[in-house]
Length: 515
Image (cartoon, helix red, strand yellow):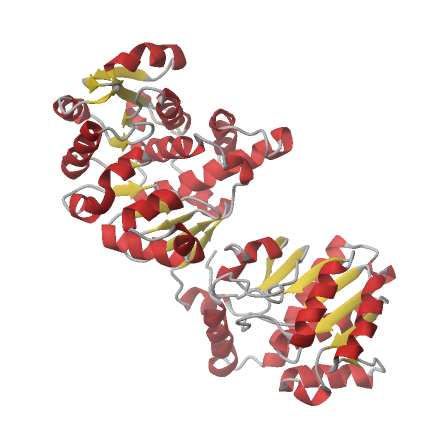
């Protein structure tokens, strides 16, 4: 599903109205009806609910007035509170207000601080609140009466439904610079907006539902967007199929270079995840002294020893690795490798010269450091980088806070600069391509905030690459499946006690949903 910024959505709306001639009042009516329909689905007894609709002067308020009228038609007790004078309404919202007045429904207008007492009384016993204060054009911080109204909504015990976006959240960025409505449900229109998917805005959204309101599919399909929200349908369309008449050689060979003294777990998790993702054969190459530990940890993975110094890769390992790589389809480098100077030197040589698709993670990324662009420019095969914000910070010399404030923009810029697919792990995980395309993941939970889960993702990604997916598709599918595995575990284990090996074991369950 495409993702738009608030600005892009405004342009889509303009094209629908001006170029195609769809009346804005028709779109407003459809929007209000869509919200009403969703509320009726959730509350079959909605006619018996005490409902408060709070609106501003813009067209989001007009949507709220359609919701109010529709709910009143169903027999619900609805109060409408407008935080403006009637003359301040937009043209479309004024039309909706006049329609309600003709039906004998009086709006309560609040323009002074003492007017807010009436809103506080209404919210005290409300069962459902509809937020129509600000729409996707909102920027900055809510102030004055709007800020007070938002605080009153958040103090209410009622179920809160936001129209299009919770008031106080910026649609372009997800930034929240002042008070914002904590919604239980957000019904957005046509396509998801970026600010609904990125934190901190995402934590105000509650459940997100995307509803059509009459934009022609042809217009939506023609409208350019470089951002995609990845859902089950996208993954189902792109995952590799398993043929009945096949053997292990048909599903690729993965070589994993990982592990150092004290970090054998990362290597084991990564290698087994590649198998769990469907790779035919997985080879794990570790410092020679770790082979005994790996033999104990892993059964199906083929273990190989490499020259070492102090439990880490030695320079002499490079020739042996290239020999191992000759008949492999994919190379994974990084999990648990450590930062010994000899290891760093070895990794840099390997990354620059290996002519196989590469997944670079953890200490593999740390080894590149400020030389990343120079080293990666020497590669001739596809490259996937899988940093968390801290690793990306070291890679591009930007602060973690700066990265988190613009996950999409910085991921896109870095992917282009390093000519690599970039998987920026976090909430949400973002996959960016060198040509500027961005995929935003829709799965996962805080159970993934545990050591080793990134190693599972790296192995899963390598396993999908081995089966013939391109680097972009493999990255997007791996991220979705990794998060889906954690979501399947949530009801069983909760989020507090989930660990990486649980996610590893749940990968087949996630994959099974697509068979």
